[in-house]
Length: 381
Ligand code: NAD
Image (cartoon, rainbow, N blue to C red; front, side, top):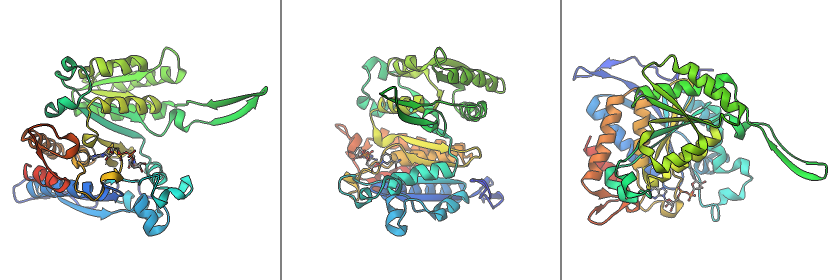
């Protein structure tokens, strides 16, 4: 079977402006709730990228989550996995519904929408999770940190190992000598550490060339191995500055001095906690993008937020997290850095001009709906 990401079939061509023109196959998962609305706007922006830079994106619609349950009776089908594997990258909205009212949640857990998401991550071997946390000057008021800290701003990316460690280790609950006892095991081998560390260094090379590896090497053997292997990988990246930090200190530094971080590299559970902390200090859930990558260039790109069933179909959702996820896709899966920069600059311009969806609205700004926000960003490319 071809590895995911082996779907690029067409050679580069020259467009009329003399630049390289590229054809890409992009899987699109609209998903549930606000998913179809926000993905629509991200595709609008991608189409504008094609128009400006002369690329061609062929979209393949994929079913996942609740939409797949409704159409096929299960949250993830073999067909979706096979189609995704044939694409260069997959862009997703979000999946899931209201757990109290949606019939999807009458099903056993293994057949609910979220099982589809875990299943596709596993099927595509997406072991590297990237979550940028960036404080936009225009949204500083939403930052919950002290003003002197938020005034400096921050721009970091958390690289979390996603398929190993405590969440995937052996576990059991038993009665030992009459006492209920639960055990979880945290295992990493050097190959698992090396592949995620390489990803972090590669991405640091596209940013400010700093990696802070976060561990608990004063206590855990798995962290001591993590530190050793990270240092070995660093030798291949002489331009990148590597530092180490204990996870408890990192949790403090994220709220005391977030500006110090560029790429934070860490294992699964530490990353789970730190990436939520880092994204919450930006104060704006509708702005947070994410990516999950495998060993090829292939990745699944999605906003960090959920399917927001409370505002679905009302043209109220902020599409920016999904548009920024599409920018990550351009940068990390398609190597279109200039185009990714252009999308991010267009988002900044629209914010600077004072346009806001309801979730980030502040005094003196212009309220826009989901579709108008997508159009404004696409027009500013
Ligand atoms: P949520 O992120 O969907 O919503 C939390 C709050 O933030 C809501 O008030 C919502 O209206 C608001 N919000 C979220 N995204 C927004 C946006 N783009 N623009 C404006 N407002 C936005 O979290 P939840 O309510 O806990 O979960 C709803 C569903 O989403 C559940 O079924 C959950 O399992 C699912 N979920 C999916 C993913 C995913 O697809 N990766 C991630 C998290 C949650």
